Image (tube, rainbow, N blue to C red; front, side, top):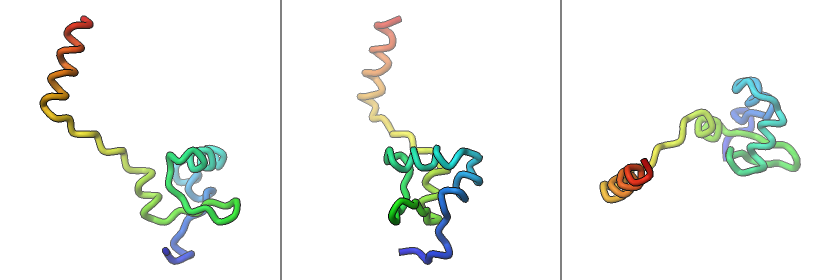
Length: 77
């Protein structure tokens, strides 16, 4: 586990991301953002914070899947 001095509170994360604390709690409760929950308080390690601010990786489509998507788009046009 990380050093408690390195973890960030929900308020600190909200300030850095310029969102409300309620948004931070809502995203954690829904499972969209990783966090450590201690009682009713959420804490964030530097790694968890980095995963929140990094954009999600786009899935790499196989050529067959790409071809099917293109064919479907052409049929609908």
